[in-house]
Image 1: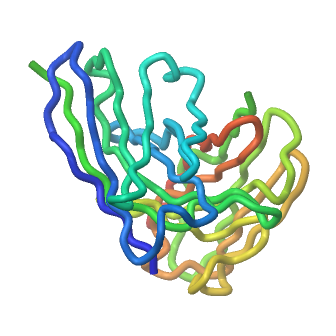
Image 2 (image 1 turned 180 degrees about the horizontal axis):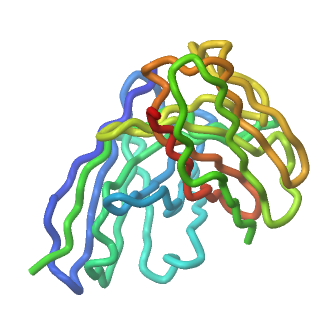
Image 3 (image 1 turned 135 degrees about the vertical axis):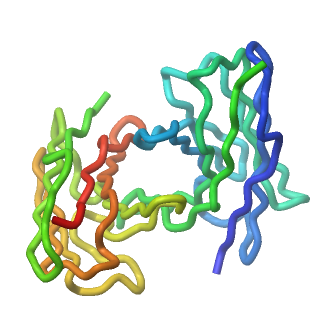
Length: 121
Length: 107
């Protein structure tokens, strides 16, 4: 069973860059899945940030595209998120997730536990 | 961009009752690309339904999904105590997006 685990700083200063990594275990990041980031501000709903395929192909939320970079490290079986120029509005629980995408649909079959990132000076 | 609107915002019901949650899309969504998740406080979302009506592995048969086009429904036939949570629908059109959620609370 695939498991995902987020890691990274829990506190980022305004105007700085948020950096998170998601380690994948129990399966290969080179499998036929898209590897995604989703966030959830405190007390609010879910927002898709973006995704990456093991080939390096990426898709980003248009509202965040100018500030987001997602990369993959196949040698370490992990993928990463960078979000630049952060403000308090970027304070959220950040989840990594495995997206299943084929003729049966597009859905998130596995999720990390989530990590809270607070933007504050 | 396809926007999903869930209703009601909050559903107050008692254990044993039937819950009917709605998810309406701003434009037609392929049924293959409509999913439902359950989220409890402090936990990650859990996949319940994919392809609008297929139950994910390990999901009890009291959960069912239906719908097509712009109108989709998640039904919980008889609420168990562990079913009180927030439910999200999610679509994949030009890009993935979630509804704002429906909270099912104990009446």
